[in-house]
Length: 355
Image (cartoon, rainbow, N blue to C red; front, side, top):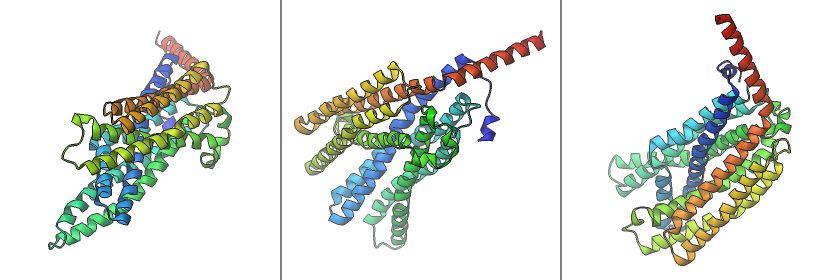
């Protein structure tokens, strides 16, 4: 990405340190929300299909409620899913300046895919609503054609939204993770590395599993805790939601400690530190707190536990992000020192010329 290299400004070591903190904060926003979008579109499509197969309208309502809850505001899609990958692209371009690796290219391509992905997710959400609205007036003159158009748009946008979201997150995760794996920098010149690297896949698989878990946790929080929980709904629907989301949260969370362990083991010795190990262990321990919260929700119907489930999950992801950023900083330390020295030299020359 040569045009991005031209936009890079000289950075002092202090500024590079600040960029690491900024990258961490951006990931705090990006990972939970894109995980939520990826999990919600997957579950919404699954229950829409199940409604069609079984003829049970409760599944269709569940499908609609899932995607409506996840896409609560259009501005959230822009701020939390579209914008962060572009910010990460420029941050990584600054930190990895002069290193001839593919991180920036991966991130920029993932950013472009992310724009299409988020747009398609929101198209799917609103076409599903219009489909339901027009379906109630089916057979009324022009409404029939609008109903068919909404149905076709919904059928097209859903699967493509999921595909684009998976592709976007994979490239973004690979772009960030490559900074950790210094042993793969040389190989990254081969574009096929992104599809052949087990390190990237394990990291993305964690985000994918986390997406299902956080979607289930958000739905439980929304259905049974937020503003006293959902009202004016049948007990049958509430029990279906409780049973469904506790199972999704539990099954997806089972894989998280194992994926955290594999990911941590794969980090090269040159990037590993005690801090990385500590935060990775803390991330795994918090997942076990999630298990306890899910038990409280499923067996004791404790609605207060839904907030704890969500907090355990989000803080677990944040701990892993901090650990990864520590490894990223360790891996790129020599390049940061080099960039800092060049900045100091440039500043001295400028001051000498001015004086």
